[in-house]
Length: 397
Image (cartoon, rainbow, N blue to C red; front, top):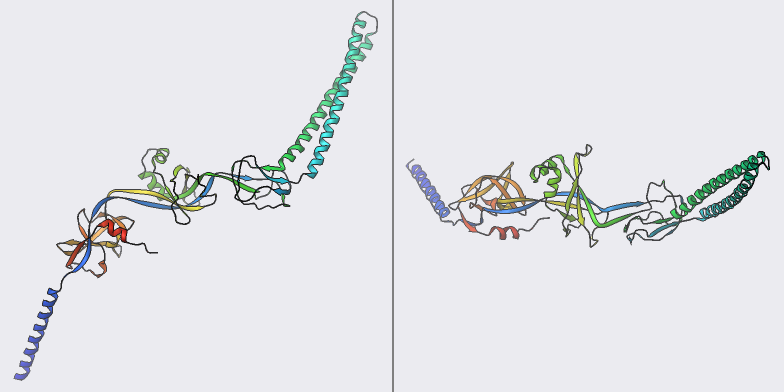
């Protein structure tokens, strides 16, 4: 029994000595080094992105004004044309025949007018000759009245001949206009779009599809939409009392093209539709972009970037933040010990988190490697430059 007590006491002494040795070793283990940054105040520019469709400033559908077969297509898709340039020729054989007949009718009417004018002159001479004879009682007044009736009849026939000539001329001009319409010309200067109708196609004014579209792309419109909430934020955050004033004070916007490259010139918001679309719940904006180099064309797509500037914002690296259960925290350093600190973030921009609550300028936070830390852990701070750290972080695709 005495031996058992001795063994138990020895075991306790051995366990106590082991724990003491482990604690000594742990205390002697050096604190791990972590990159640390100071909370900084700086101006940060963020962007709100909106899908956009691009159209030429002027787009004209080219349509046939008369029905006919396409005899020749004089241009090609993508070709730059000038206003008045010939685009299509329609077959005019029947029209030419009608024009020839119309011209003949006009000539015949001219001949009838000439004959009627001669008859009027002859009748007038007869009246002028008989009037003094009647006044001198040399002849009977009946002869004068007969001559005057003949003059009136001749004048009526002349009026009728002129009316016939006017109708013939109108018919001829109508046919001639249709012949002119068979030569389809560019309504504006610009770039030719698709050419769905080839030579031999029957076309007409009732066709749902135009012969082509001419787009003036020296300047372009980009159209994008905001939902109601975004639009109200736009009105609230933009300087000016009226919508016109707000648009005038709004900064220039950028266009990201379909290949993710930034379109060099910036654009100006020109107008906003006056009401929310009840079908989509959105309101449309129109942005004007110059296109002097012809880089964009009608039908392109892209993304409008609207700048949002945060003046003197408190920022930390996004890599310093921890998102867990709807809460954002960082490890703030106090005398080389980290403490879990809850913060409020307004936005995340270019690997930076914009902080509105929980930190102040000059506070130090662990910038990277927070996954291995716990609250109240002793560390060895390695102070690094915020900008250098953020620029070294590569985007993940």
